[in-house]
Image 1 (cartoon, rainbow, N blue to C red):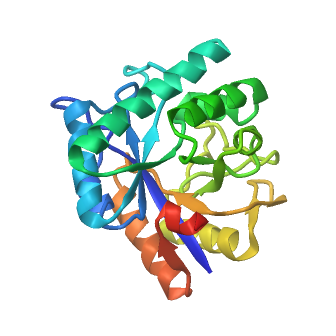
Image 2: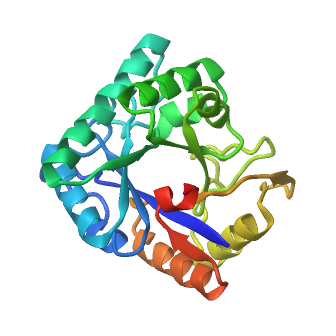
Length: 255
């Protein structure tokens, strides 16, 4: 049994620091690097890539709506053509930085509001898949399990990895509970580990109402921007390894 553990990183900006990327990059197998549109800048991207390379962590682009003030979590209404170009533009920025650092971008994972909308909006999902394919057909498309993004990536002929979240709860449709809901987040590391082990071993999600939803689990995300992110990630890594689960990079997961 094997799985990938990933985190959204490189979200600091200028003099403003978000999370503890150095610590997280010593724990996870893959990093989703912000590309400057919801967080991150050229120096933050460079430093994140170099730290990932030092730790043998695979890297992916984490493109978003152009929404620095809202951290990419505010909905926007854009056309398919805009979405396609928006994604390819941000992937290209990280590819340039990675080339400078002598490293390689191996996956793409949309961020925040654009990701949430594309999970249920097939037209937007198709546009993002086209943008990823345009940036590189060998890039892995990392998408929430069972979502329209998974179907779009597969239809575009991309390698698709299906993702679940360690620190979020699910509704009866298999989507993330909206952040404004009191049960949106999972803060207790033990509860998170129980959920993750069930997801990995049984390939199933359990909603907040108790509904069991079949789910393919290739990768587990633990967000890097919370105050307890490092402790949560450490607990998950230790718990998964103790359960006999091998932790691998995303390219290794799909090899």
